[in-house]
Image 1: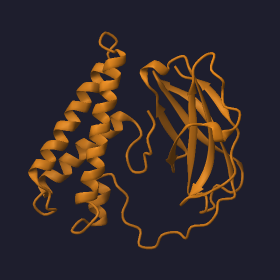
Image 2 (image 1 turned 90 degrees about the horizontal axis):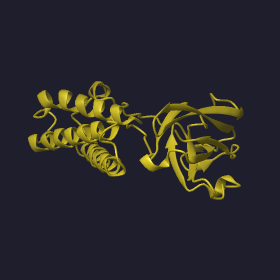
Image 3 (image 1 turned 30 degrees about the horizontal axis):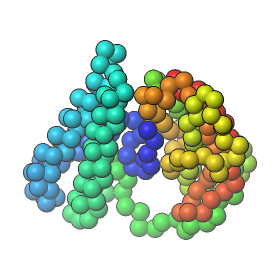
Length: 221
């Protein structure tokens, strides 16, 4: 599984930790921030369901393709609710910048950086993290990493089973996600172990894209 992680933590444990923090911070402030108690109750229920599903999917005796699918569904439900919860309650006053920081979110930027076309080229290096997981590291091939035009990267990838034809060019990669991190994480499906993941990356800045980096591959653990 790879999603566009913007403000959400990449890992499932990180998403659970953020949900814990939101409940802890919001509970004493729900009246001041106009957050209904039912919203916090539902957030806690979705968090608990996701935590239980993750424990089942990670247990050697209970891990199956079905439990892995149920885990993905539980986290999709949790993160979807968190996105909606943020939009409803955190994007307007009375929250201050310090409140957003306490929730693990970035303060509002009143002076956004003008959008310019990226000129750098980057590649991706992979490394092992855990079962069904690969870490990806952004490496500059050309250009200045400190150039503000290099706002973030879109990592494209495809999972190819043995015997299938691998992609010959980056445009053939079928999935992607955007990240502003130098390192990120991709969680694959249970059945992807033993398959090969192919990657290529472009610098991306508000829809403007730099040159493609080379295609690289890694075996999914």
